[in-house]
Image (cartoon, rainbow, N blue to C red; front, top):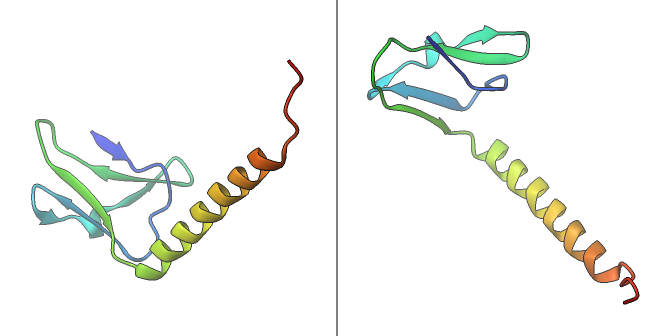
Length: 81
């Protein structure tokens, strides 16, 4: 069985399976996806981002979207009742 991470894993990501580092085992699957072979049975899979720059960029983009949506909600005309 393979767990689909639904995206290409950029540098800075780390994956562990049952506490063991399995980052080198990440595979490209279905074009732009990344997969990890996982044996049958119950396991603990952890995927974490170690690259602070990517994390900061993602936070900035998310904040911008929230602020834009808040601003447009305040300035949009109210519908007449």
